[in-house]
Image 1 (spheres, rainbow, N blue to C red):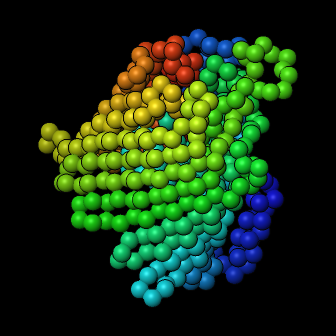
Image 2 (cartoon, one colour):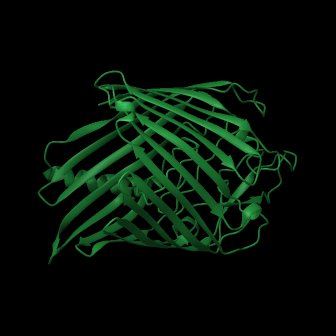
Image 3 (tube, rainbow, N blue to C red):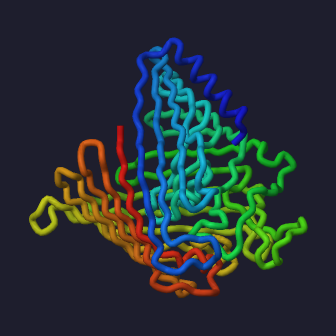
Length: 409
């Protein structure tokens, strides 16, 4: 993210604020800690880490047809200097109105967009870059510069995106846990001569027809998922320890996401066709991938106020072992229990299995309000088995137990 672009967006919102209504400030302050019971795989790694995250949101209205939102984020981590970072998650001006029988909405600036219906992983979700050092499973996103136009009516919702700048994916540093065998360098290379300034475009159409909710999407531009090249410049480190260089290709992706709701039963599908990307062998290969899931809700469990949701999802990438992604042939089975009590207690338990490698992991999460402003979250990822042939073997050995105390204001 270029500082000049961020300043330009903030200047735009500041100018709009001169005629704005009173400001609304909200957000979260989170104190976090993790404990890794297994011995570190690499020198410099620690068995425990701590830190905090602050993410405020400033909102203001400009007349009756415009508003602005600014959401910065800052994280401090005691162990990994790369994980200590700041980002502008949102900083956009929103304008809206009507065009005949249709409504329109235009967002200019930094924003976050979500596409998809699956719980484990979202294949179709391609507009924003992942902030991978934040969390390995929650899929937090970096703010993306964009012009986002939405037109909606009885016929559905059409969204168009102009994306003038590419954000590089974040990766753990030398002292960070959940990293691979080799570090990923901070510098990146691009297939496009315009590098990170290549202008990407995206489109999505969504609609509801009876029990079916669906979306059709298309993207053309710089991939959010890098391939990795060996460093070309001389390095004092042995070749086996020299950092990988992220390389971002020009790709085209067509996607579909759909959900069928039949009472307590949900059926979910995400599927993509992508061209222009490299496989694990360094060869360009077009491919298809999908994720299929089913979800069942049991209300008033055993006559109580609690609700139980059971979920199963299967993700498949036709490249198989040639896929550079960890999501190549995986099965996820989980249960989510909502107690529906005053503190809003929620419990989640899931098992993730890689059907191509000997990898199994147990996922646990407990969330509960301590007061009107404070929430506690316990989570654990326990790696039951790991396969040395797996591309992500080193990171998948890092089981951890984490606790977050979040103050919302």
